[in-house]
Image (tube, rainbow, N blue to C red):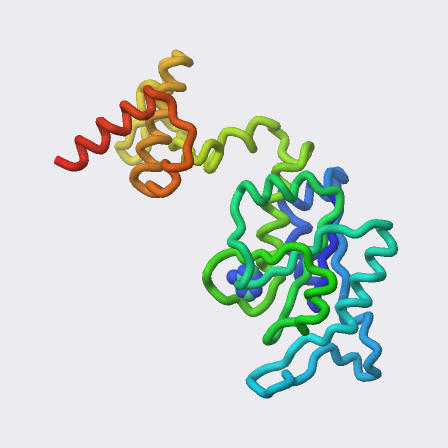
Length: 246
Ligand code: ADE
């Protein structure tokens, strides 16, 4: 996976993603990342990249030319037309399935806007996907781009040490993950559930499945409609619903 981020704040991207698991993945070359400074492509002698909106209104709009030229230089370099994701609160709200779809790409381009947005004409020309990270407004697209890069990267082979760990987790099967415990066996008077100390793997699996169902029912009941539930799961949930209704 090769990420290319078109931004006015390249340092923000490189510094934040250079640490932790993503930083290690960059070192191992499981993924690569470049932040392209849009300002370097402006033809304005004062390095200006924005101007006031036609029709009036508050704020400034990023101009089409530097964004387009930055993108075109990249397209020429990689030799094909990549998916270009524009981060905007007007986009489709990001979710795990989208992360899986994006993880299959060879190159992904993230376009980060600032101010009151980017001239519509260049968006029409280059953007393939409009993506939001939630119904709130941030000051720019850099944090959303990093959120996507993090979520996508952990699905790229070689990024996580344990290949299994991206599979059995929250949102796999649309169920939330069961609770986890580690040493000591007792902490502040709270004991680790005894089944986890039993060594009985079938019982542990069954207990974890039930915990996932309870957790999803309590915290994200909306997910249960999309979950792949067995008849046994259904029965367990019916009992849960009956016992909590009383
Ligand atoms: N830019 C500003 N706010 C945003 C959001 N919520 N998601 C994606 N991009 C944004």
